[in-house]
Image 1 (cartoon, rainbow, N blue to C red):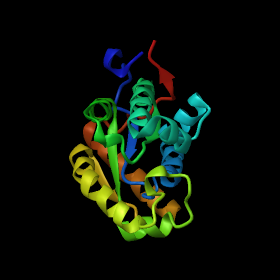
Image 2 (tube, rainbow, N blue to C red; image 1 turned 120 degrees about the vertical axis):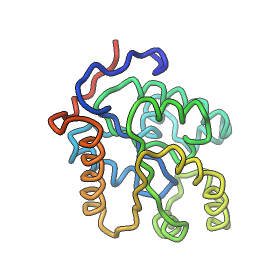
Image 3 (cartoon, rainbow, N blue to C red; image 1 turned 180 degrees about the vertical axis):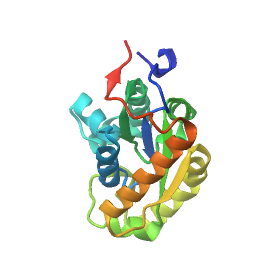
Length: 201
């Protein structure tokens, strides 16, 4: 069922889904896995789920269908993931480009923007060969251009902005988990807690 057709969660307390947005190399997967464990949520990676569904890598999908084909598949996957409760989802860096995606994220959970710098991205992605948008001779120029296109969208969509500059993923995850708990406690009674993953009927 698409998220637009799904009824709102019947669970007490705050909306329990968390969606991580931000550029490639911001730590959405590495930090997200740790935060999900700390919060008792199930971790899902949108790109990984798409690769499992199609049996093809993101690189191959880009090669065969182009970026537009990939974005269409990404939206359909996001529609499925946002029908789940009790999950933390790491999204792709370009997920914010489509208004439909932004609406799905906004209406179905807490959106956390992991901020990072181009310099930090270059360091973290120095050996990465799996991301089609940075297979170029000038990665710094490409990452700078992507930041110019997307950063304002990240900022507008986010409920929480969080810098992912720490050298320790564990420390970063603990700080972010505390911040999310604080956000939940302000939204609803402190006794509310996340529920396990379940799909809408």
